[in-house]
Length: 171
Image 1 (cartoon, rainbow, N blue to C red):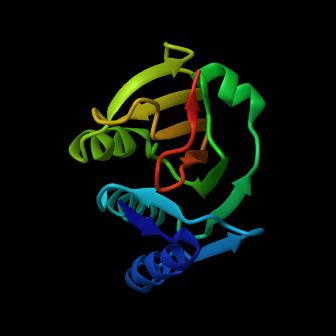
Image 2 (image 1 turned 180 degrees about the vertical axis):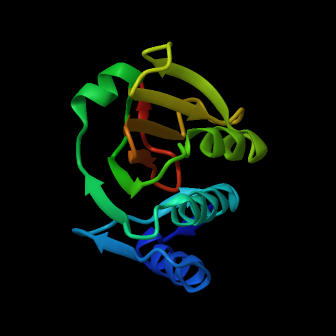
């Protein structure tokens, strides 16, 4: 398992994609951010793709806002998906664009070997919650909360924080 420091990785990704595009990107890192343990580079690839697409699709006069936050408990989410990790890492991407990033997220997840495990509500609406898993994992690897209203797009990616031994409990 690889140790992944998102607090160090996200600024590198922002510099890479911001250098090539016109829309500014603002990144907020809050609190003591945990190290994530991941089997491969799929999380890095996913984040690079999503941030690149957010910047590419963003209306030029509006910045892309990213926030990386540690959450100790998310009781409602934990009850919904039936897992209880040590904590959560939350990445929020907010942008103004004419196009949704949801199709890009779904395609990228599929390409990287993730599957949609569940979706609430099941029908398409302006606000959805989607759980993605990998075949070798007993619980969702990434949860996505999508809020879209007119040109405002908010995507919140919730990643359960696992210790190297995978010390979260699946209920």
